[in-house]
Amino acid sequence: MERSETHLKVRLSDVDAFGVVWHGRYISYFEAGRTDLLQPFGLSAARLKEEGFFPAIVSFQCDLLSPARDEESLVVRCWPEPSEAARLTLCYEIVREDDGELVVRGTTTQVLIDSRGVLLYRFPPAVKERVEALLSALDGGGDSG
Image 1 (tube, rainbow, N blue to C red):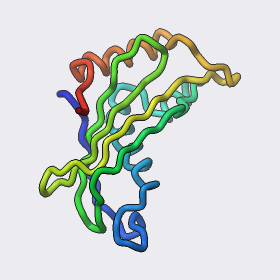
Image 2: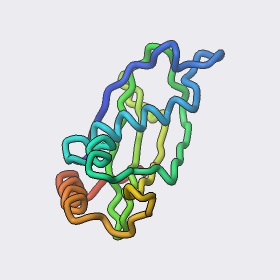
Image 3: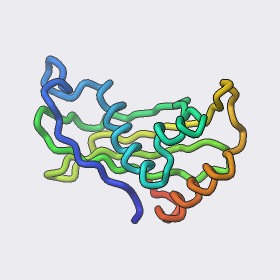
Image 4: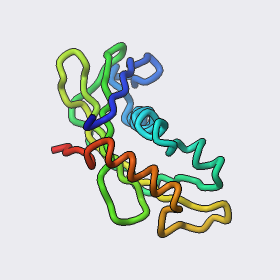
């Protein structure tokens, strides 16, 4: 497996007055893909929170390439970008399911904060093992270009 894939249908509440997906909705589409990717590896926000860690998004980048419209089916592809630092950068592509056209490309970067609000510069051992399992399962990531 190189990337996870999450299938979504654009809802009427996702589109703006022009009938295209409002740019702010792509954040939630990225989150759906991120959740589907990370949950099987025990890296979901809920699981980390149970363990006393808070994954915080510190960077979000999104390039809008082609408009998505109401009722279109989209595929969110998500994969990790390897890093030596205690952060998790994920890459995303959102494509139109019917023709495969690239709609959006972007990244998010997360760090861990402990229950005292302190930024962790190293992953705790159990979290590090799960991140390494994720990277191994996904062949070390993908290429969005």
